[in-house]
Length: 257
Length: 298
Image (cartoon, rainbow over all chains, first blue to last red; front, side):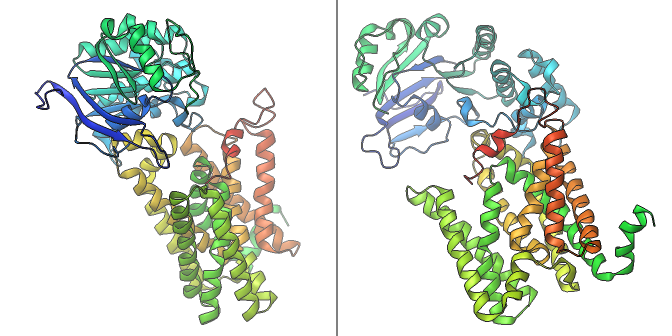
């Protein structure tokens, strides 16, 4: 058992976390222990149905754990879920969408000050969308929309940033631009936790990796964690009917969910 | 006699026409913006269901104290809220989806309402409740509709930003503010019921959803900006009311259906000619199809 005392540098600390979805016999997450130091840039990988999104949602405070001995979470977090959760045809402009990121300073009633406006424009510039500020969001492509979501994250100015599969079906140029944004967040000493499935991408850009399959399979430096043995172990735990493991991603033939 | 004279003369001459106009204008200003949000939240058919659900409450009110406005309104409000809460409860605690349990409850509610009314009154009363009587609005009814409109606008202005955020990206709102999403949702539902109750005095339970949804649905063909859409929808609603009333006056037809059919014609025109309509978006494609795809799931 790891030392339970949380030092000042640990930003997330979880002990004996269990999570069941309603009417589900086996827990999605069971007896999970996890400590994440502040300022970590880490990837979460694992087979389909391993509980990656669930874990991130619990960290984001969107799901309550079914049981947990201890769960210490930071105050200011920003979370970006999978795109399917958002109504991409809502009749507002890109500027208005991005300005949602200022919620903590604006709340439900305050108006946008000139300074805030400038902040929104700066965030739009940073992700390369300044020309699209006044365009309705349903005119944005998938990549542009994700850029807008990142602009919103920039405005949230959070100490911990959680991203769930941010690069699914996104063009290469956008992925590489937004990767620089992620790296910039790391250089600003923010903790960035990203659920990913492209293992090559993880190896290239993420110093730390967490492999999960209902519980922690391996956690630490990407080089030492991302081994064939660990990945195979994760697959076995999720009853994936796969015979071979592709080098660059989990074969998504999981039949469990 | 010019067209302007023809349009204004019934209102100048008859006070019942002026009352009808005031009632309809108040409804246009308060119920139509609610309708815009109902479409955005894929709840357009929820309004329809709720409009039936308020019937037994209104009927019981009617049974107890005759055509008393206050009793019927309170009854309708209670019945509507009970159905909202019950169907929400059922869908949270069983496998049944919210729309299915809502359908079950509103059907029972509607049948119960018709049963109560037909037992006590004749078919005239039933017609009055189902199709309203905008030309017979008395002062009490007007005060009621105006109060509901005022209250409704006030609440909407308070929850506006949260409601927008909750409609577009509920998970984001939950991640930055745990309670405000639920707060907006639980204030919005009574707001829908309140407007339906206010509207059914004038247009009847079947028609009131029309003034909520039709002008709003039309407005989506003209803009992709929420505030423009709301403004457009209210203007459509107001013009449908005026034109519908004038038409019903001259060709002597029931005014509720005349107003709704006018709004319906505006919808058809918008569908074809609107900026995002069939003809003008190039691809001959209904751009807002997504808004209706899942509209039967409140």
